[in-house]
Image (cartoon, rainbow, N blue to C red; front, top):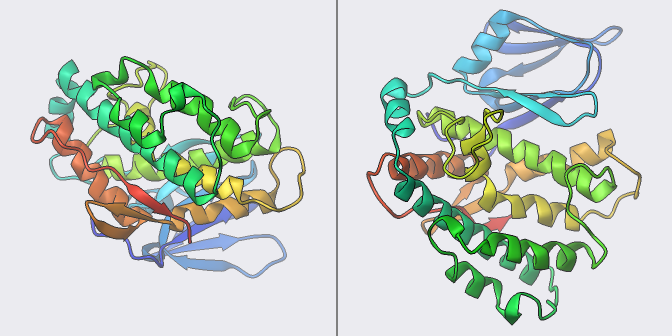
Length: 308
């Protein structure tokens, strides 16, 4: 998969429309308006967020070949599934067979490193927002907690860190629950879903199957590995939501959703190199593949998260 330049676009369709393919372009037809056009090569993500949207099969096939992640939202306007190109890697079948046979020590070691990176990134977000921590979690810094994560995180350091992190970032009364429909939780849900789709896109393009997780194992979760791999990137969404200064309306609005789109144009540091998010995800997914296939033990995860 070729690296994505920073000009790749996130296209959201939020009204009744018909989407079709014209050569190598997405054509959007809406009643009473001139047709819109976007070259497929310019797109990274297509978000379908309205019930009355019609899309043609040739367009879906072309989007897959162009490695565009197609995200479909549900009635609550939350991304609920992603259409991903499973054959983007020439050794996909071989990689998936090896992935399915990965041993527990390998999975636990990968989860340890993912969790460490997530906790370090949470600490960096608190530092950037100049949040003063109360003496919970034994008074340890987030860097110290990350260093304490054992293989498989058997001590649940991730949970201890989260219990300090969310109230510190969003206020002592804040409770992080995906089922809650307050503005902050709704924005977090939407932003995480965007990151999840982008991560799933990179995972599948690297030849891995997103259903075979290293920590998440819900049999009804088709994106378990993406849910694992995205963990270090969640603080990007947290930071963007923490910076929100718009109207405190309940739930999501078109404006709050558009506010969250730039999370996909963020930059990350990977192995000392600063990269656009999608390019960083490509390298990160390749790192995950190498570790899942036991071709290496060290997993370089995205850190140094920076919003546009």
